[in-house]
Length: 114
Image (tube, rainbow, N blue to C red):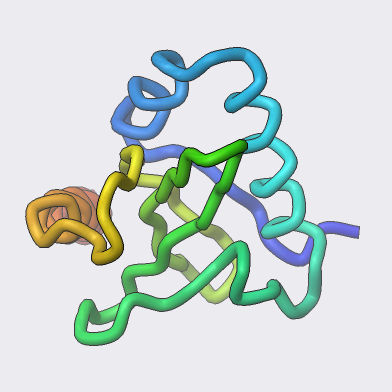
């Protein structure tokens, strides 16, 4: 049973995804499936970013690499994937958060004008 639908806005996420190795793509796919199918998603895989007004990160680890995929909800069920990056430091880079918030705003403006 799916509790959430996942979709992509523009090609931001898919551009990131296409650059990954086959093994990393499989891990990303597995984590997205968890996000869709678990009623309560473990924080290990999905976390709200405080101070961001609705921005979440999908958390993917493969070997020693850490990846983050930004997303947000629409209508409490749909998760829009916006962009992703490979995390190299402890804290999430502010520029990546700003980019995700800009894309989220772009999406909201597009939805409100249609």
